[in-house]
Image 1 (cartoon, rainbow, N blue to C red):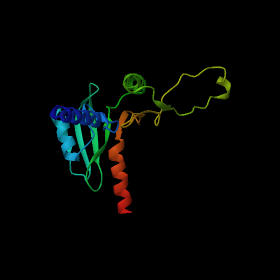
Image 2 (cartoon, rainbow, N blue to C red; image 1 turned 90 degrees about the vertical axis):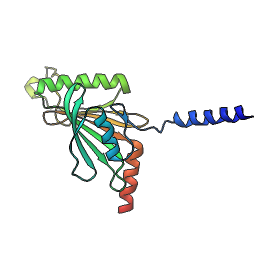
Image 3 (cartoon, helix red, strand yellow; image 1 turned 180 degrees about the horizontal axis):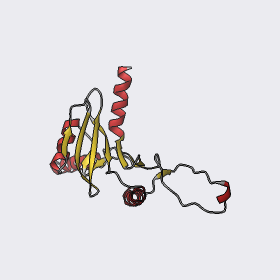
Image 4 (cartoon, rainbow, N blue to C red; image 1 turned 45 degrees about the vertical axis):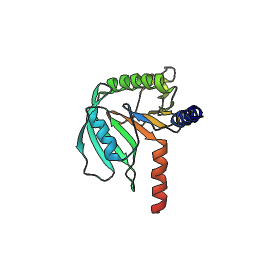
Length: 182
């Protein structure tokens, strides 16, 4: 009888831990828990806290995708639960930026599947209608990957690329806290 109870207990734990309601992972660390605890986990991976004076935000520096980056970690207003991470890759010239954007898209597509992209529309000059212009990335172009645990957005900014990780569960906590304060 004891073995059956233990077996049942193990099955319950396994099903509970395999839930699709897991948290989004950033650099092998789940985006969950108190903002300070999450930042502490990142410092164990080699990131360095550069600013923690702002409320509900910690800024770190470190290597991500083999580049020195600035990482912003945001917490909810009331409980300060980590819910969003924004990575700012270093500034690049336009051609390099376009190459990096494509390379990052391929990397994330191989891990998260095909993302939803939006590119700015370009006007063709009338006299060049017969030419097919090459696609040229611009500020605001992005690709978003949706997972069971959150959203990852790669976006072209002015001279650099940002990657945003938004955890679904903790973002819902943030929304509830905002509604309570309204």
